[in-house]
Image 1 (cartoon, one colour):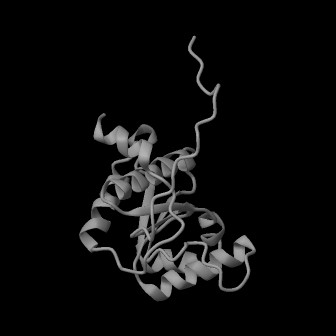
Image 2: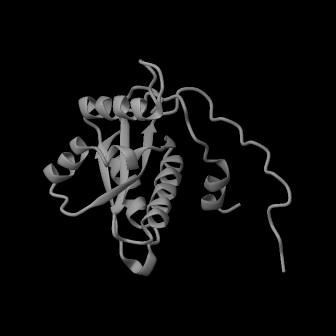
Length: 174
């Protein structure tokens, strides 16, 4: 079987990460894969913020927890030490589709490199908050952006989950 297809079939969302930081070289490879995702009309209207700073990571975790309505102490990023945040230009009509393709590439690249990942929602709500708009400005990101998703990254703590059985009657040939 082709290795790319094998990775697509075997990748799973991970919900338990080791606290060990990922090497920068691996993070950069994953980001590069995300930057090569298909984009409507070749616009490349997405951006990626790599969060490796523990204090910022913990702030994002806490804000995300509050938005999600979970109890104190819950980590909606499951202990992942790295968060890749995908944003897209707010006025780009294909922002959600393009950003979703970036997220898919990030997760597949992580798996191909032996790392775990999980798509975490609520980036849209976070980046509507004033503090996150200030973060974008501090990074030199001019314009209006919508949060598409967070890609939680880390080394898997435990075994890879098994795939759920695929539902039947989802493909139709004409």
